[in-house]
Length: 392
Image 1 (cartoon, rainbow, N blue to C red):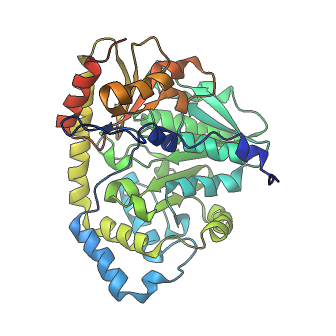
Image 2: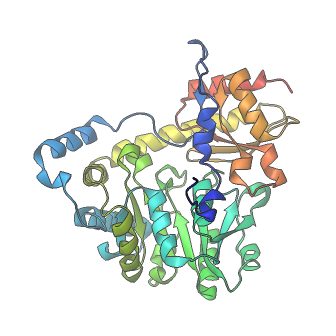
Image 3: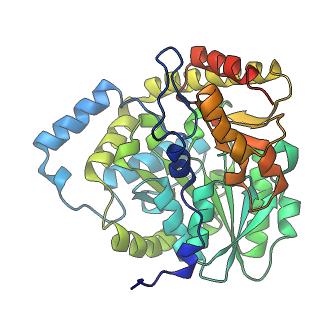
């Protein structure tokens, strides 16, 4: 007997990172040439000692840390994020416009559940973040690809031509995953204007905002006094404070929209992790200097990536920023096969562009995403030495 299977779930592709991990199962790598795992954008080191101590103290001494909390998150954390974001972006954000989620992926799923139903459409620039595409597929929502060309920057005029009566939202990620590109403020403003004129939501995922190379506010969207009529902002505490295992994210939107989000969150998780929120709040209040140092290190690695590809014949760097470099390779084979060969021949694990493009898209076969945030500059130099030795 075979149990029923939701057709939309069956049609959704498997998680790419998990698929890539299967490529290294059963393999061993020599101590003098360990695997360079560049497949996933997640810190591999624990949070700094002070944050861990705060977590331990809460676990031992705060009974509330082990109980259900408010569905939309701890009031203190919502207030802190609203206050800091208001200062950073030069706008006005209220605590009632902030919800805390179990990671940024849940923030995306929650907001999308309030916006789009089966048969609706959502515009995603390509190459896209695969988990965004997966959630839309699971819900029967059509992901409409918006090609970004060799610059990897989306164009609002091109997006306007894709809007139909079924379109509900446009999704942008900046600094971008997978492309690493930082979208200019003018680009974001143009998309805001397009979304507002067509009655759409502009979903802005700024998971990697803490590692933007620019100084000052990266965009003026929150300075618009009516921002919450069009903008939904997503954020993750995982990268800035190394809290990946605690699953803490945020969504910033109108209070009316969050009342709908609350229905989703109460159903799937009841509340976000109390300990994770305690860690995020402690980090926001105490780790600004430490996060600045982390940003400096990521920017140094970005510089190393840019220099390395400039000297590597045949490879082209399309985008580089935050945790990612997105490149074209010089080999005859498609990237999904090349990525598996690189594991065996170079001891390097990265994701092929086919995982970030619509099925059958020619561009994906020429592209690779490199998540370099977990390799220091010495290992980045080793990466280029290994790639230079790979034969066609």
